[in-house]
Length: 303
Image (cartoon, rainbow, N blue to C red):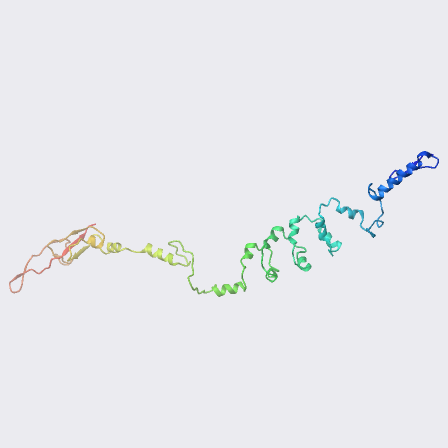
């Protein structure tokens, strides 16, 4: 009868009466092979049933599927040791199943002192990363942030920033500073300056009034032009041309050696404009000749 071999490791099983001269050597070879298997020289491929595998006398209860989860894990021993002492249940740890956060994102939780109850506030939150990042750097206390509880979610970060530092009712502050009805301003309030010529009910600033006055101011020359239109007579004991004094018009000497008489439509001697008459001297009641006049400068505006 020929020798046979074992199924798994092909160890020779010498048969009595077969190869008698080599039976002992074959046994020795088989024993050496067993020795290598037992001392680890040759890898053993056990196929133990669940619950039959023990490590240091402690039965391993993990299934093959559970142990295969570590297949391909590149975590270091230090990283795996982070789980040492973790009391989370399997259900709690499974919450991370499917999480796509990076190591950097998960490390954001490093050092967080929030309680489970506090962290659970995020349960069901549908905010995006951008929306949650609005809180980045916020130094508000829990009490301050709780003020937002119930506020409509349509407020932007800019709009929420308006209440930064507010410590009382906003309307009360507004009414204290300047009530909307019949306000009384103090200090140096400012307002927008309206365009020149605006005649609405908008507030007129000092700048607007100054411009309006400047635009409507009448100069002395303009007043004089209205006071002494063309054809006017100017009399003075000073020989200076009226243009120099008044700043307006062209003036010429007028009525040289004459005195002026008022127009009288009822008297033919005085109802013709420009009529000249009279004498340089008159006689007094005693028969003496006198000069009853005084010489002054008479000017007429011609242009």
